[in-house]
Length: 266
Image (tube, rainbow, N blue to C red):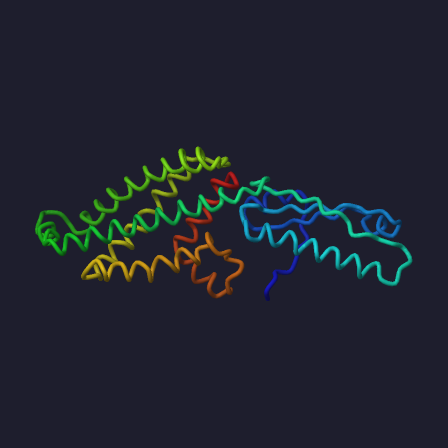
């Protein structure tokens, strides 16, 4: 199905469902709506939109408006009363002004942290193998897991600091992002995710024999992660089987976590 079936929910549950990212739209139809239409009045309908989903927020609101107008026209057909289309009161949650740079800025921050973590870790392995220093490290009285952990921590620390600077001075300072949640919680999530990204970079560097090979593997790995993790393309627009596959990728949960903390105040 292209569209999910609408669900009846209690008005008290709207904030929780939208805060958890489980609902993108909430249509509040007032009591006695049909009676007011039959009496010739034009009662208003309130539409609540999760503005963190930028593409759905823009297109979905206009689609819902068209559906309501069509339903009113069908309801009016064959009746003597002239029931006009009800006005739609739009309320954008979490981004009332629909500032698109907030959403795109956060997505770019996520994409760049992923790319840097994978490339730096992978390039370090390839360069050390090319210069013969990797063999020197392996004969030292340290385990390979300790060598790899040191590389992940060193690169991850630098990227985490850069992410904090970008959040404070670029997203908040230049783009005017109003962080709804905790910046410290976001940075904790960044550090946790960097262990995955750094480990993936080390794996790609291990199977690559040169920097060109690493670049090709990087594109084959990172581009699908970036496009299908929910940052650039809504996961709801993907087939269900693809959503299930991408739910196994930490990048999908990284995007959802960041949007929930920075934009929804989770």
